[in-house]
Length: 640
Image (cartoon, rainbow, N blue to C red):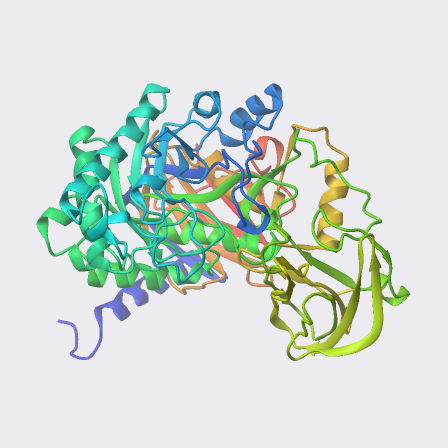
C-alpha cells in the first residue's frame, strides 16, 4: 500500500534517484532510458525554398528571377541538393508566394518562368527529398476579393477569400453563392496539385492557408477574420484534396501557438476527419515553450499529431546562443512535444535581404545585375538610392540605418529594430511637404547627398525596440524619402542592432560584413550560415527518416541541459544531449542496453566536423554513459 498523501510521481522519482546512486556517478543530470517503450515516429525534417523573389525585409514581390535554385550556377545547384538538402524529407512550397506564376484567368498556379518547376524537381531528385508540403500564402488572385496576392495593409478587408469579401452579393460571377464559389475554389487547389504532379513533383502534405491571421501590404497573404469562414473553406478544399489523393497529409492551421482557427470545428466529424495533424507557428521562441504548447493542444483538442512548420528568428540574426536554442527546440519538439516532423524556414537567402541571417541555413550570391558587392565606403541615403556626399565627421563613428524606397509616390517607409543599449539618435529628414517628425528636436546639422539635402533631428532612445516613423510629407504626388538614422551608443564596441520583424531596412555594419563575405564569392555560389546550419544540419545528418522516439525519465529536469533519444530504422539507438547552462554539464544516462557500444560526435556553433557529421569523440562502452559537455555544445551518441 502507498501511504495516503504520497504521490506516485514522488515514488517514481525516488526509485530513479536510488538507481542512479547505485551507479555512484556524481552528475548534474541523471536520466534513465526505456528502449522498449516507444513514443511517436518522426517522419523526417523539412525545409522551405525561396524559389521566387521577395524584397528585403519581406517587402514586396519583385519581378526579377532572384530565386534558388534558379540563381545558382549548375554545379552549385547540384552541390546545394547533395551537400545541404540530402537527408531532408520535405520541401515546403509557398503557393502564391514562391510559386506564384498564373494562367490567363489568374485561377491556377503555374511556373512564373518555363523552367521553374523543373528546377525544383531536379533539386529534390538530387537531394532525395520525398515531396513538397504545399501551403498557400495566398490563393491565386481570382479567388481573392481584391483580385491580388498582396493587400494594402493590416486593415484591408478585401484581402480575403472572394466569398468572404464585403461585396460578394454583387459578385458578377457568383452573385453571392458561397457554396458554388467554394466548390470551384476547392477544385482549383486540386488543379495546382495536378500541375505539380505533371512536373514530376509529389505533394506529401497540404495546407490551405499560411498564418490565416496575417494581413499586410508587403507580401502574399489571405486573412480569415472568422474561424467559421476558415473552417468552411478548409472543409471544402481539404475534402477535394482527400478525394483526389488520400495519401496527402492534410494539416491546419499555422496559427500562433495553438490551431485556434480550426479548433472550434474539431467537434464536428466532417471537419475532424479532414485534419490529419495540427500545425502551429512558434517562430524563434525559447525551446522551453514547447511544453506549454503541447499541454494546451493535448488538453483542448482531439488527439492528433501536431508540429510546427516554420522556425526562424524574425528579429536579428543568427548567434551562438540562438544556435543552442534551435538545437533544444528540435529536441523538445520531438521528446516532449511528440512531434512527428520539424521545419526550418529557408535553405538559402540572398546576401542582400535584411532578414537573411535569422532566416537561412546559408547565403547565396546572385548572378543578376544590381546584386554585385558595392563600394562599402559609401553611404546610401536609402537602399539603392542617393549617395551621401557630405556629413558631420562624428557620424562616421556611429551605426547607420537606412530604409527601402519602392516608390516616390508612396510615403517614406516605416521600419523598426532592436537595440541593446540606450542611444542618441540622429535622423536624416528629407525636407518635403513641411514635414516635422513628432518627438524629435531639430539641430543645425545638415547632410548633403547626390540629389538633395537633409536636415538632422535628434532624440534619446532607450534600449529595446525602436521605430523609425514613415515620412508622409509630400509635394504634389511626390513623398519625402524614408528617414535614415545614425546611432551613438554608450559603448560602440558592444553595441548591437537587430533588424525588426518584416522591416525593409539595412544595418550598415552588418551589411558591410555580408558584403565582405560576398566579395570573396563568385556569382551564383552559396555558403553556409553556420550558427543556423550547424544546429539543423546535425539532426538532418544523424536522424534518418522514420525514427522512433524512446521514452526516458529525467531525475532533475533542466531546461538548459536537454536530452533526446530515438531508435533508428536499423534498430540501434541514438542519444542526443545538449548544454546551454553557462558552464560545463555532466550527464549520466542509464541506457538499459547491456554491453552497449557507442560512438560520439560533438557540435558547437562554430564546429560541425567534416560533412556536418560532428567532431568524433572517444568511443564508450557499457550500460551507463557519462558525458561531460562544455557550455554551448551538443552531442550525438550512436549505438553500434
